[in-house]
Length: 256
Image (cartoon, rainbow, N blue to C red):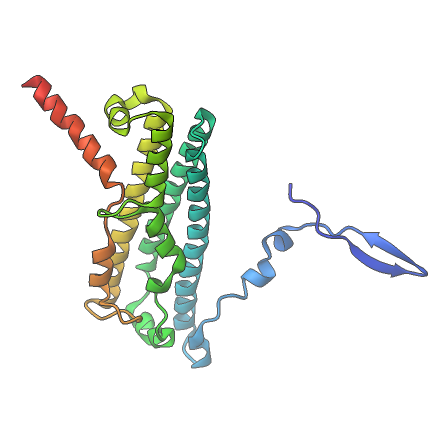
């Protein structure tokens, strides 16, 4: 249960009476503040209600994306922390966190599918209000790319895992080859790959959405639009994929 909020002090004659303030759903989630953070600019233009609601939909979608990114980054930071100790309990907890991140990335992808319900004519009407604002400016999105890495660069998550294995005297290639016999190590690898796949699907979904909504138009921040996004949509954890490929090569050699 949430803790009670700080008590309110009310005057009572010559003494102060301390009355605890009940924590409610609204106060705990700060809904009075949260629900005022969506400010469609088309409402100032006298646009019709459906256009204003479409802009609000656009704002809510991006705000919730940033909230989920906050959660994902926090979870991944906790996972990196478990890789510093490499205890069995810590590794099993990291598996739970990684699968949660994968589910949240799936949720972000589905949110893109919902954004496809944004009418083109409404988007064209309020897009000028964005100025140079663009998802390309999302600091959390760039941080997630740093943590997960890309096809050509290992991210901090994989590097932390590999370093933890080296300190523990474990070999990553042997872990991948052993499969379920590697226990917690195997489960961590599988969970990281699930995160990588979820991340890639989210990125590709973003490319598809932008192509649908903008065609070949440039992005608001001066990028090339869909082409810019496509160039950044790469699969992380390349080394893990290569090691899994070697398992197939060894099997072919064994069977002649």
